[in-house]
Length: 368
Image 1 (cartoon, rainbow, N blue to C red):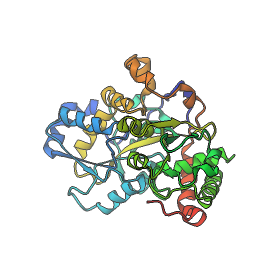
Image 2 (image 1 turned 60 degrees about the vertical axis):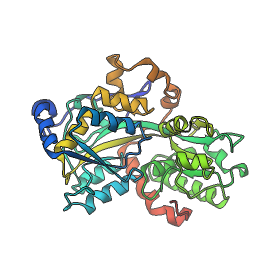
Image 3 (image 1 turned 45 degrees about the vertical axis):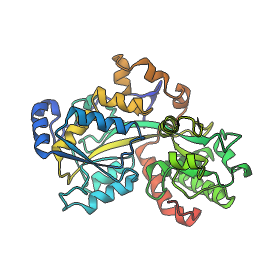
């Protein structure tokens, strides 16, 4: 799908005509006025510890104090987000999300189903072509790599690769950071395991990944609990398979109690891009566009980077020298990204279809 230059995505060039004018043409003043008249923005599935979303939302509210930000279900998965749009097509109330932040494979699904509307932000040219819909229905926002997040108080020998997780010493220790039947993060956790087991990206990685988790479950090492900072701290999930940026954020949140170690595995290094989109049924479409303009501005992109997420406009900002050095220094080593696989959209869709359909039958663990 993409090539790597250091830790950034290589930018494309071609643009397509959109059905919705960019904010620069529409006029930011007009957009702000229209958003002010709406008075609210409804988000969904944005945990404050994920990519520094807590500060992103706070800064957005400071910049546009006339908007109330209504936050729905912070712990929802990508499939839950699409279901919220479907369920609220005729609802203009506070349960209808305006904007979405979903895994890569969910964007085209949402567009094909008519769940999104097109909009191109002012910085559209600097978003790589390979991670945006030509019509503007969805576009990449940030990316990271999957890692093992380990509670050092409970795990003496920190696992370094996927095969290590099958060792008896990790009994009742390993969890995914989501339900693999609905969560993009968990679905790609299965894909990464499959890649480490020698699978090719797509259906093959899904099948081998499901087989890996079947073994992990049968040995008693898999914990069917959604892993997060709280479960790590409580000891319910001593090892969580999660995005590196989530692990780094949890490490900061827990501040050494317990100490966490974030390990990018030696094999099966998988990068994942998430997408933004505006609901086709957004009750507050102008507030949604203003939110997108903020997220894709330098300010918004740097706030994500502060949360250890590589913003999609990383290359553009690096070339212009607007990324503070201390932010670059806080990121995982560049080598972790240089060997990471960025799957194509077709590979992601094929993998997701097999994982969602096969998890219950092959693995049989009800993650919740």
